[in-house]
Image (cartoon, rainbow, N blue to C red; front, side, top):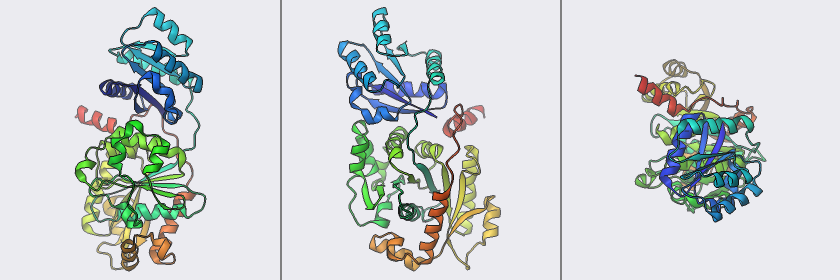
Length: 396
């Protein structure tokens, strides 16, 4: 999937171009609120893009000089210019700076689609280090998603040579960081999203909470009202900055199925549905799995993770698998004393009780993920799950 960076000072124009790009094909779009004269200063954002779309109402000498500076730094990055007045003199200047297409605003979707397809045919996705993205979510509160995300991240980092980031996307009093750390986070997800316009890799790193060597956490929202302000494109921008610098990014997606979480699930290499062996979890877990199937996530991408497994389960594993219609991928044992002690001390389980039953299970799960092969490449023309769902609703 090619990544398009859209740069404009006007937020409404950014949103409209992103909407049209989504209708033209399967592209990931990132937004940059900036004038053409200053685009060259955003080196980390430009390094993440496969294509660049610049939108500005009028192109003066300062704006063209800014584009020329950007082109000198990134000559391999194909670029489209969108402006209000397309004049012959501007076309000549644009061609001299290496811009592939100049389009007029208001933007025609067919013209934009043709221009994007020309760039797509002539370009290849940049090769860059990219983490495996694993999302964990649940059908009910209390399933243990936050505990599992934090401790699995710590276990992966302890495998040796692995850089891991845990992102707390739980919008209901996200407390992932406090299950494994007693430090006060320098920033939370809503804090980061509120400053997304100045966000680059260095700024993001300063907002993270270091838990252990090679393991960082971006803390979740302590206030659900602030959490509601987090938008899909902001989370995608954060992920795009983080993925090239880590081996694994784990996301605690909570219980929400909405545009924000769907955007993360679309990019995930693995989706873990966490539930406990109870009738209540089995019923709602089946509904969640049905939703994920309706969003056309393949069966080999969605895995069932059983938490608090015990010989005295309310529901035996065979019955649980029959209700959910899928086998249990990994089971974590009931070990309440160890888990409660670790959470009370603000420490990862492996730092306190490495040989415990839950500690060994976390190491086994980390090994399963670390030994997994590279994810299959996504089809270039496949629409996102959110778009597929909207199309199904319209068709109905």
